[in-house]
Length: 131
Image (cartoon, rainbow, N blue to C red):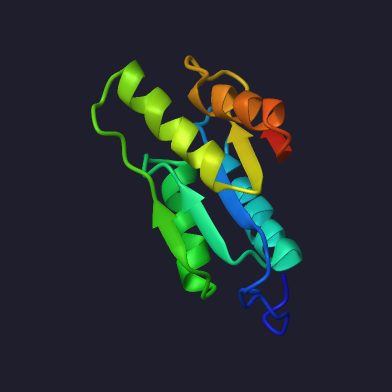
């Protein structure tokens, strides 16, 4: 993304959820993820960027969106167990118009993938990247 590109939020733009893995095995995966996030922000001009507040992609997405001037909202789980994560992930799905999922190819859990699956089931546009 060039510095001169307009990345300002569009009030009529989509609510964009960005979720993903906490850790990656591929060297420079977070740099690739940052490029993907910057591209999606520049292309979609979301009115709001939402995420789940976890380390890794969630935090990268919120930081990148904030730096680019997009409003952000984090959905934090009420409890840090599967029922809490599941409830938080469903809130993210319900709140978004589009979802970007950036996952590690060797992830031991499927939380962000599960969230992307729920978004697809509900007719949301989903972009999935595996690094």
